[in-house]
Length: 233
Image (cartoon, rainbow, N blue to C red; front, side, top):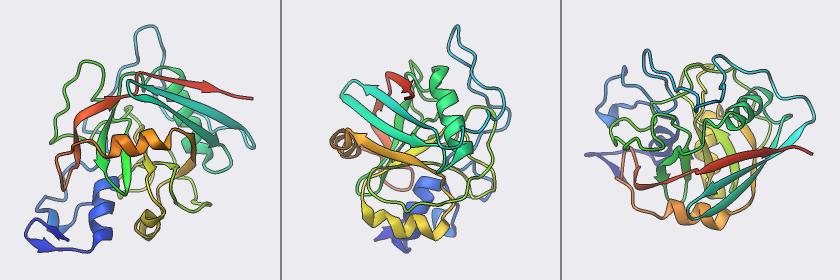
């Protein structure tokens, strides 16, 4: 597989897509804002009437689990999130979901056979998706890193990030295939929050929709998360 005019290993390509790693093959400067990064001064305002976090929320309670239901115009995705997998990431993800942060935000990056990625708050509701800026938005803060204690594989839900420590914000991805594991484990920094329990057929269908191709793989007809709700036992 080629990347631009240079042949590069597939793991470099896929890590660049998910984590926004900047490599010499990308012909980009190291100062380019990578996927999951918050551009200087950028914040995502809370939905009307809601109070979204202005800083990193409290960690999820040890031993707790939650079900996240993601409604889209094409169907529903259900996720099981486990605090013990990634307490900082799960606490943050649930806080953003509860305040409505993800409602209307799209799955902006589609990499068939690898991942779909969403949660970039600058692209949602009536905001047009700028293919050159996908993956640069966040909630206005970042959270602490969690240790990786489970394997990556099909259906895993994990946080996107930059190569820098403690750089996760609001963006997340769903792994499409077990074959993605070696590439993700080569960095082993993407906090695993849980897995999809229902709707992987929809995830596959979204992944198969048109995208702009390498390096951004921006969705050309992005699917929004119309409503994200949280249920706890």
